[in-house]
Amino acid sequence: MIHRKTNFKTIWQRAKIRPILLLFAFRGITSALLLFLPMGLVMNSLGDRFPFVENAEKIQFDGENENAVLTNIKGINNIMINGKNPQILTYEFDFKGQKKESKFSVFEPDKTDFLKTGDIIPIKNLNGEAIPTGFEQYTFNMNFMYYIAGVVFLIGFILCYLLFSKVNKEIALYKTGKIMEGKIVAISHNKGFTFTKFGSSMDVHYEYGNKLTKSRTNNFALTINKTIGESIKILVSQDGNSSCLYPEMIAKANGWKEN
Image (cartoon, rainbow, N blue to C red; front, side, top):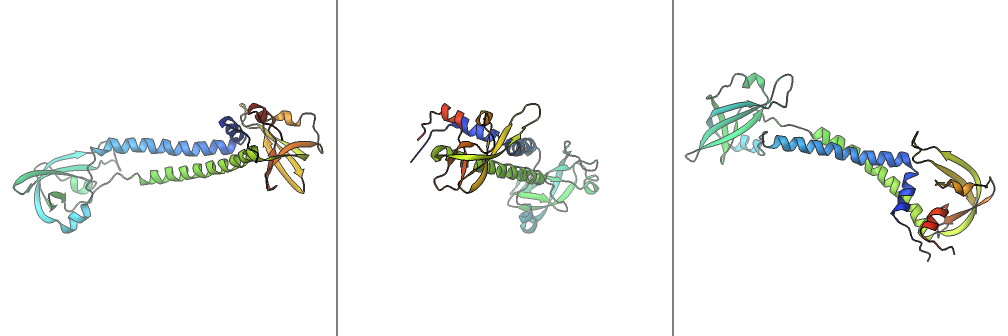
C-alpha cells in the first residue's frame, strides 16, 4: 500500500486554513486554563488564612456540648459582602486536661458584632475537634467559576476535536490516497483574517466519478491557468468515498513519488 511521508508542518498548514475553527478552539482551551490559574492562586492564598472544618456536620450531630473561651475575632479583609467581612473565631477549650485552640469562619454580622474577646461561647466537641454552636460555617465558594471554566474548556475541546477530525482525514488521504483527476466545477476564495490575511485560502469544487465535492487549499498556484471544466489532480481514498486536492508543494517538500 502507498504510504507517503508527512510532518508537523503539513498538519499545521492544514489547520491554519481553517482560521475561525483554529482560533476558537485555541481560545477555548487557553481561556479555561487562564481561569483555572488565578482561581488556584486565590484558593492557595486563602488556604492558610481561611480555616475550614471538613466534618462540621458530623461534629454538630455527634459532638458533646461544652464551653470555650473566645480568644480572638479577626475579619477576612479581602472578602466583603454587603460592606461586611466574614469573621474568623478563635477559641480555646479543654480536651483531656489540656488547652486546645480551634478556629471557625462565620459570616453572621448580627451575631458576631456583639462578641468580644474573653466571651464564653458554647461549642460541640468531637474527639478534640470543636465548632461553635449557633453559627454556620462560611466557605469561600468559587464553584461557579470552575463551572464556567469547565464549559469554556469543553467548548474548546469539542472545537479542537472537530479541527483534528478534518485535518486527520486529509492527512490520511495524503499518506495513502490514490492519485486521480477531477474536473473543476467552481472556485471560491476565503479571505482569512482582516489585515493579517492569516488563513486565506480557496475552496475548489470539483467532480470525479459521480461525486461532487470540494477541497480547501492555500496553494493558489494550483489553479493558475486553469478554468472551469478543466482537470485537476486529486487524492482519493482507497474506498473512493473521500478525496482532496493533491498538494503539489507539500509533495515536493516531503519527496513524494507519484505512482
